[in-house]
Length: 59
Image (cartoon, rainbow, N blue to C red):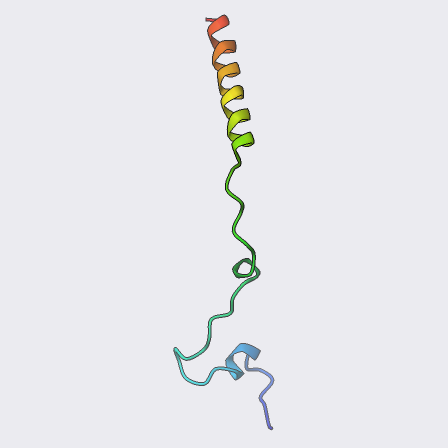
């Protein structure tokens, strides 16, 4: 097989324009992040209330 080395590697593998398969990146194999748990929601509400009370004490 006589291959011209000045041609990029990805171009050698192309058959016709539009038929090249899209390469899936590493993100395509990663699982979706877990939804927030009830404990995380509870701490979020507690922190929000604490922040509101802190702001109200200085106003």
